[in-house]
Image 1 (tube, rainbow, N blue to C red):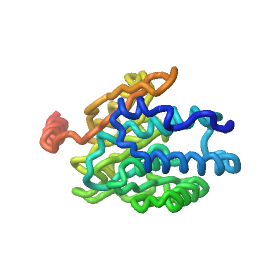
Image 2 (image 1 turned 90 degrees about the vertical axis):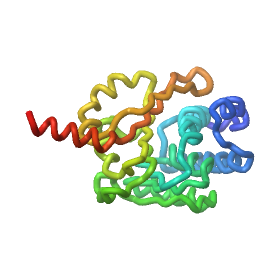
Image 3 (image 1 turned 90 degrees about the horizontal axis):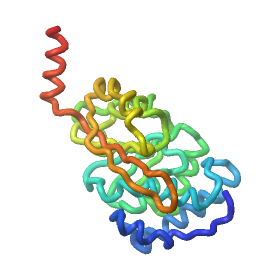
Image 4 (image 1 turned 180 degrees about the vertical axis):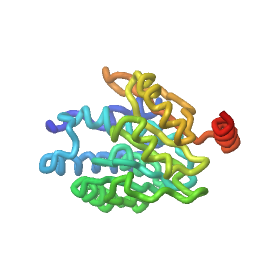
Amino acid sequence: MKKPQVRLEDYASWVKAMNIPLTARRADLLRRYLDELWEWNLKFNLVGVSSYRRVLEELLLDSLVPAPYLSPRGDILDVGSGAGFPAIPLAVCRPDLHMNLVEPSARKAAFLRHCARTLGLDTVRVQEARIEDLPPAPAHGGYHVVTARAVAPLEKIIGWCAPHLHPDGRMFCFQGDRPDRVITRSRQAMSDAGLRIRERGAHHLPGDRPRRRLLSLSRLPEDFIQQKGSGAAGR
């Protein structure tokens, strides 16, 4: 990444408009997180984005969009956490939530643990594993929120994450401006997992960045799933 020429304070109006709970202390923690990412990325190439501005706008700010909508109950599962987006920014802005990060890369998992220690994020737990290899949650257990950003195609994310979602939980998936084709390809996966799309929230990042979408998925009502199963059996 090139030497930073922008500051988080430059985006105060955008943060306010998005209702993101960013205090001065939390902004300082996010700056420290970006500093750590800067240093580690010089050695290990944790992210492919080449400039500090793009990291701040496209990765960090985008990661903060769900922060106002997360329920204060239960744990959050972040799948394929990579260099920490969206999990670390969300953990900073929502310290009331417990974040469980799953990342298969040993190097990236080490970076995530380092950030949790350095920033004092006691609510962050890092597991070096593939989400596909983790056992599914009990029937009435699971995470109240599951997040996934730039991990895999949506249909794969659904297949991997649905077994870990609480019956009353929500899954947040970060997408580009035109998710219709992605959603169409994922219809069967959603049906198999008993999920539906609740919202297709659109937001603009600062500057000339393309519009982004935050898909919110939830489980279908149990009686609907049972009726669907009965109908299929009767055909």
